[in-house]
Length: 293
Image (cartoon, rainbow, N blue to C red):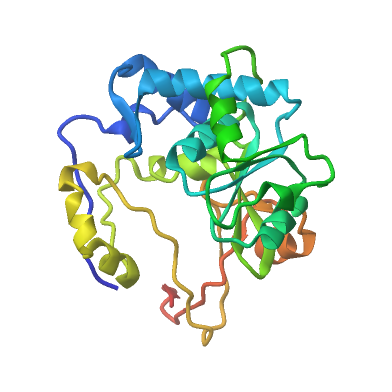
């Protein structure tokens, strides 16, 4: 353990405090488009997009997904390293209840296809990366369309705002396949992605940075980020010692919805009422004090 204490108390309400009542991406985009329409929301190096533009463009893409017959709960796959199409598709999908399944840009075509197949993908969007090949996804069951890099950008640019379904806070929006050899797709909701910072509002809690993240922040490239731009860092736990005997559960808005089509993995990771089996170890001392190791 180590690193700086990043707890900050801004003189004015920060973004988490102002949006504490919002638990969907649609709500967030609408809020900031109304609050600061001309401010830059995304700067990818290639293009700058204001909050008003991001609201309009992602609403148009959400409309386009609905026009393709892609409904809430359906999956779309993204494989590429272009920042703009990725964020545009992610936010648009989240607004309308469609689940984004990102695939690593260097994932071989056969492995990428396996993920898309496992996710029952309705559409595939590709960026100009060596590992992304449209022909690898040909013939996937249920696939409505596969966009290569040029077609994806052209389709995004050609969409118009119309009606699209809205997503609920606990609906899935993101599915992450963590490793090349791990078939499990971790399914996350709006609340999983948006509620973590809200949970500690009003509490002056220090944020202690683990060693790996500490080294990342010490990298010369990280010094280009102004200190005032860094609001908070969220970090998952480390593996705990297996020498102790007590294995607790924990429950919060950040606990995943589960693994996609993996009932046995879900039973091992989650209780029937949604509590996460953390795998942490500990013991209760004779004094009655609980020690987590």
